[in-house]
Length: 450
Image (cartoon, rainbow, N blue to C red; front, side, top):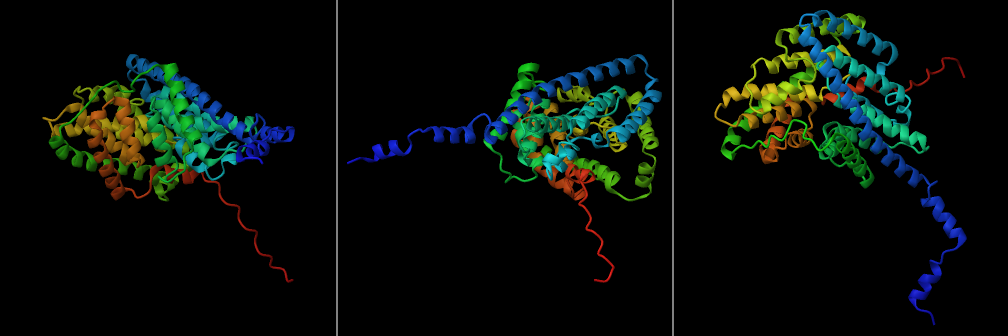
C-alpha cells in the first residue's frame, strides 16, 4: 500500500519530456525569460543613458551660461536664430521629437509595438536628445526630464525588439517612469509618476517586474552619479498653525497659475484661432518670435535662461530673489514650449514654482522661507501636471524635506482642484492627442447598382 508521499513522488518524477517542457516554458528561450531579460536590461540601460544625458545637458547649460555672461547682448541675435533652426530641423527630420516627450509615451500606449518604429523609435529619440541639447545651448527654458521619459520608453522598446518579444503598455509605462526615477534620482517619484500620470489611473496594475525596472534604473543612476539630493538637503519644516495659514493660499495661487500655463499650451496646440493658424502656417517665423521673447527676458533679467535650477535652489535656501522672477520664468517657459522645440517643462516648472513661493514670502514674512518656497513649488507643479502625489514625492526627495510632507500633500491636492477651475483637461494627456495615430477611414460605400 502506497501513501500520499509515494504517489506525489511518482507523479512529479522528472522525465526527459517533462524537462524539455519546463525548458520551453521557463528556459532561456522561453517568452517569459526573454521578457524579464528585456525589462531588466532595459532598466540598466535607462539608468546609464539618463545619467549621460543629464551630464550632457548640464554641460550645455554651463557653456551657454558662460557665453551669455561674457557676451551679454549677443543672445538677442543668436537665441531667435537657434529657435528657428531647431524648429526647422525638428519639423523636417524628426517631427515626432517635438515637445516634452511625455505626451508621446502616453500616445504610444495605444499601440506599443507599432510605436517602436514611430513615436519611440531609435531615430526619433536620438534626434530628441540631440535637439534638446541644442535647445539648452540656445538658452531655451527647457528641461531634460520629459525627453528622458521618451528616451527611456524607447530603450524598453529596443530591448524587447532585440530579444523578439512583444512590448506591453505596462512595460512602456515602466520605462517612462524609470526615466523620471533616473533623471531626478527619485525612485519613489518614478513609481508614483507611472501610476498617476502615465497610466492615468490609480487602479493600474503594476507588476513586481515593473517595480523592479523603476528601482533598478534609479539605483544604476545613483551608483553612477553618486548619492546626491537634486536641490540639496534642505530639511524644511513648518509648524502646524503656520501651515493652516500658508497651505490654502499657496495651493490656490500655485494651482491657478499652473492651470493658466496648461490652458495656454493646450490652446496653442489644439485651438483654432487666428494666432494658432498663423503659428502653424509659419512655424519657423513663429519660433523666431518666441526665441526673441526668451532672449529679451534672459538678457534683461539674467535669470530666466535654461532650467532655472540655480535661481530655484537659491530661493529654496532662503536667498532673497526679485519678485518678478516667477512671472518672467512663467513667460519664458510658456513661449519656449509653444515654439515647438524639443525639451521638457519639469525643471522650468519647478523654477517657476519657486518664483511663486518667493512671491508668497511677502505675504508670510514671519514663516520659514524655505518651507514657503517649497510649498509654492509643489502647488505650481501640481497645477501644471495635475499629479499631486508625484509633485509631493519629487519635492520631498529632491529637497530631503520629509518633515514638510503633510503640508505638501494638502497644498498639492488644493492646487490640483484649483487648476481644474482654469483648465479641465490634463496637460500631457491633451498634448498626447496631437501625436495620436488617426484611425483608418472606412471605405466609401459603392454607388454602383448591385
